[in-house]
Length: 312
Image (tube, rainbow, N blue to C red):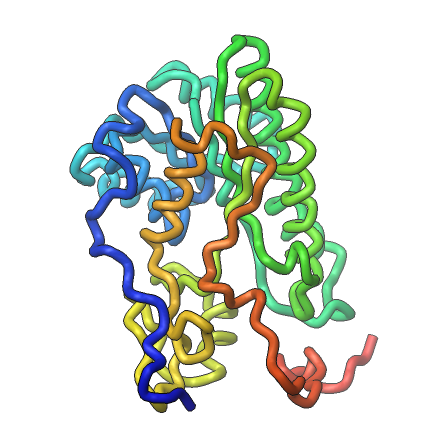
C-alpha cells in the first residue's frame, strides 16, 4: 500500500526520442548480438536512430530478417545487415566479423546482448543445461569480445564494447545458478579487459537491465513474472494505489521501457562517455538494492517453481 504522495519515478520520454544529438553514430558500425528480438533489437533501434550502420546477429534467420526490415525503417538509420551466428562457434564469429567488414566496415561498437536463461533449482540442472547457458552467456560473449578486440588491436583503432549483464552477478541468483555464474564472469571480463585494452583506446563497459517487459520474453520468464499477478506494465506506466502489477513491486513504482536500456547503451559507447570504462551501469530503478525492513518467510526455490521433493 502506498500513500497519496507516492508517484514513483516519472515515465520516460516517448518512443522515438533520442538521448544524444542526431547523427552521433553517423559513419559508425554497431554490431549487436541477439539483435533480432527483445532488448537487443531495442538497443539496436536507438543506435540506428542516431545514424549507425547496424549488423545484427542471431541464430534464427527469420527473426533477423524481420528485425532488419524494422530497423532499416527507423528514422535516421544507416545501413542494416544481418548475420546468422551461433556465438558459441569461434569460427563462425570470425566469419561474421569478416562479412561485416566487407559489407559496412569493422564494427566500432560491439553490444554483447545474446544470452540464454531459464529458472531451475540448482540440483535439477543437467550438465547440458549448465553448458547451454554458460556457453552462450559467458563463452559466446568472450568469443565476440576477443574477436572485436584482436581486430582493433591489429588495426590500431579505438572501439567500444557494451556487455549486457545482470544484477545477480553481485548478489547471486537463487533459481538461476547457471546464469548468475555466467553473468558474474561477464562482469569480471568487463573489469579485466577495461584495464588491459584501455591503453589501446578500447572501452569495455557493462549494462544491466532491470525489469523491462517485452514481447519476446521466454514463456518461463514470463510465467515467473506473472506469478505475482497483475499487468505487465509494458510501456512503463506508473502504478496506482492498490495496483498489484509488476510496477507496484519496484521502488520506481513502474517497470522499465526497452528504449531506456537503448538510451543507456548509446551513451556508454558514445564520444560523451570516453572516460567511462570498466563500469557496469544498472538501469533498474534501484530494484536490485531494495531490502524489506523485515525479511519475509523463506520459501525454497523448489517450492517457488512448483517442484516436488528432489529425487536423483
